[in-house]
Image 1 (tube, rainbow, N blue to C red):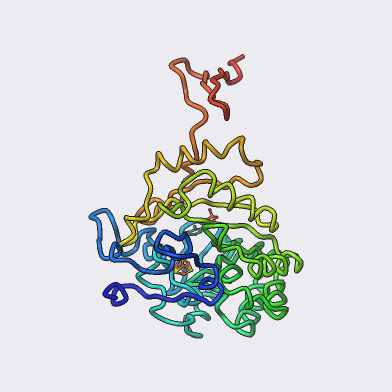
Image 2: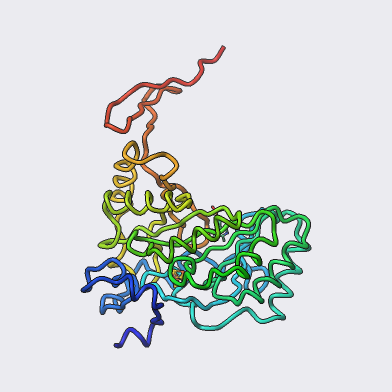
Length: 322
Ligand SMILES: *Cc1c(COP(=O)(O)O)cnc(C)c1O
Ligand code: SF4
C-alpha cells in the first residue's frame, strides 16, 4: 500500500490475536494503515511536540528543569497509525554507544535533573542485557530520584516481560513504568499477566492513552479501559489529546469533545481510575491539562461557580480579606 512508503507498519502476534474483524475494529484501526493517512492537514507538523526544540545532546530532550527524556531506541514492536513520533520511529535502532555515553554524561553533570524518562521508540524493545547495563548506569547517578519508562511492550509483546527484564528495571529503587494502551481489547490475558509480573516486582504502574476518534472516543469505552487498567494495578495517568502528526487528522477529536468525555467520567468512575486529559502544546511548549472545567469565575472577585458531576451548580468563595 502506498502509505507504507511514508510511515512504517508493524504489528505483534499478540495484537494480531487481539484484532477483531474489519476496519472498524479498535485494534485493527490502531495498526493497519488506511488511505486517510496520506492526507496532511495544514496544522499538522513533522515534529508535533517539539522534541527537537530542546535537545542539548543527540537522543535527549530537556524541556522541563527536573526531568529529561532519553530516546534510547527508535524501534517499536508495533507502529501505531496515530504516533506522535511517526517521522522518527523505526528509522534507526538503539542510540549509538557514543551518543548514549554523551547523554549519560550530560545527565550526570546536571544535578537539576531528578528524573530520567526512557522513551523512543520503545525502550522495552531493548534486550534485558542492554536495559540492565543502562539501568545500572542510571542507578549510579546519585541525583536521580526516579527512572520512568514509557512503553507499549507489556501490552503488545507481553512475553518480553521476563524475570531478567523485571530485575533490570528494579535496579533503581524508584523505577516507574507508564504503559501505553488505548482500548480494553488490547489488554489480553497475556498482557494482564505481564502487568502482574511488573507489579509483583514492585514496579509502580501508570498508563497513558491517546484519545482516538472511532477507537475510544466514547464514555463507555474509556470507562471500561480505565477500569480494566485499575483492576490490573495500573493507575490511569494521562489521556492525551491526539497530537498534530502528519496524516493523523482522521483520529483527532475536538478539545470540546474530549472535555465532555472527561466530564461524563467524573462521578461514574472511581477517582483513582480517572486520568488527566492533556494537550501537548504544539512547538515544544509542554503539556497542559485540558480536563473538563468544573469551576468558573463569576463577575465578583473571589467568587466561583462550581458544577458538580450531575450538572448541579454551586457557589464557592475564596477566604475574604481580613
Ligand atoms: C511529556 C514530557 C515529559 C514528562 O512530562 P510529565 O508531565 O512529567 O509526565 C518530560 N519531558 C518532555 C520533553 C515531555 O514531552
Ligand atoms: S509504540 Fe509509541 S512510539 Fe512506537 S509507534 Fe506506537 S505510539 Fe509511536
